[in-house]
Image (cartoon, rainbow, N blue to C red; front, top):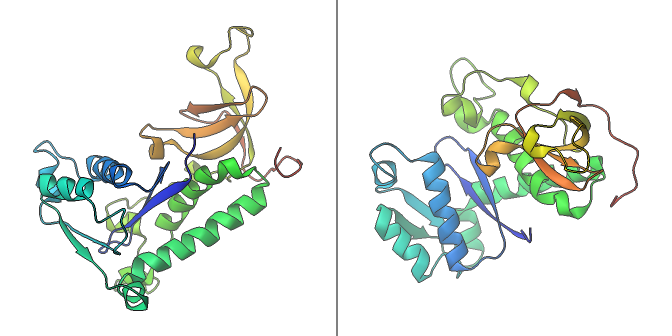
Length: 239
């Protein structure tokens, strides 16, 4: 869908990683994505202002962050912007986020190389890599019981790791087709062979995102009927 850029946010307390795909890096796109992030993660019955007041947004001095749209959003929700110094000193001041972006890029490239999916699937590889990184322990969250540290999800209250909800990116799977997913030309076909992409909570809905490669369409399904998480179809790069 023309998504070529991404906004990466890192919680300085829990080290939780958030990634949002964007079509461009204009101020309007960044402000809209920030509003979406706060609505998903910090919205309460009292409103978005309840948890966003005095939140500090640390970034570099790029034009996508220093503009009227982002400034108006921060004034509206009560957030405070802070910027790093220009040059190499600024990279050091944003070291936590820079390291997360570096690790995210490595994980994405490894996932894409193993799956042999076309470059258009890179956005979903980013979402899948975010889920993996948020599940791994980090030394920033060291406790008395675990020297390896807690994962960002555990710090934010997700104490149970459901490993059965993880599937390999690009692996082969079968899904059940609901009525809204069935094709008019094939009304009796109730299942489809797909390629697994990522969890659907990145799109704002529960379930999983798969690619129906026979009918060339993206599906969002609540569960996988027959997952083959360790099986990769033998296909050439780009197919």
